[in-house]
Amino acid sequence: MESLSQLSDLFPHKPEKQKKSAFAPWAMAASVFVATLVSVGVWQFTGKNASPQIAQVVQFKNSYQTKVGEQTTIVLQDDTKVELNTNSRVQVTYTDKQRLFELQQGEMHVTVAHNTSQPLSVYAGDKVIQAVGTAFNVEIVDDAVELIVTDGKVLVADVDKRLAKPLTLTEVRLPSQSLAVEKGQKAQLEQGRNSLVQEENLKVEVDLAWQQGSLIFRGETLEQAMREVARYTKFEFQFGDDSIKNVQVAGLFKTTDIDGLLIALEQNFNVKYEKVDFNTIQLSQK
Image (tube, rainbow, N blue to C red; front, side, top):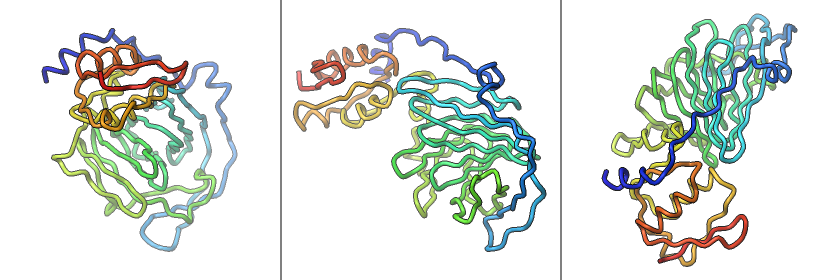
């Protein structure tokens, strides 16, 4: 797209994201290693009864988070890689039976190290996503969860409200008849409904551009575009009038270069900006 190539020249090269090791000294100090046996149950998500299961040992537990505008990569003890997007938080727990991730807010991409004896389950909202060795992106959006599989296949189900708290007291195994989402597919997971996004509506490269520190717009309204931009900055965007909200925007923008984005809007879309105060930017027709 011509507008993409024109706009991409406006932005500086993005420095490589900081990588964090799960076993760096600070992480070791913050982690909780427990050698205590706890009794658990195993929920199959297929019926009302749970079968007894042998005790689990909690081997590793830690929380990771990013601030607004920050992105980071964590490599865990089994080489599972977690990429956290802006303003996100996840709690990671490993037992001898399972790998458990609780995405509490925001967005992450997980590249799962293959291990059939320790399935990896991600809890996000009221959904659970389970994999053995695959890669996928999970984002909490309001009351829904968006899932994109970039490699392999995952299973999805609603969280059983009978699960013990904390979740480490329960070993979950999703049945094969759960919703399967495969490489290149996207699922919209809402309360009481899990469904695949139709192929003609897929925008996987757009949805995952954040991993390269970019935002891609392909005709979204200015209002939609600035709502996404706002995830990466502490600036609040206001509109001078309602009509400007419907200006269509196309281009590639760097999440770390708000000034470059505003200049591009003025030069290419006749949208001028004014910094009203330290935290507020007003957009209006040029």
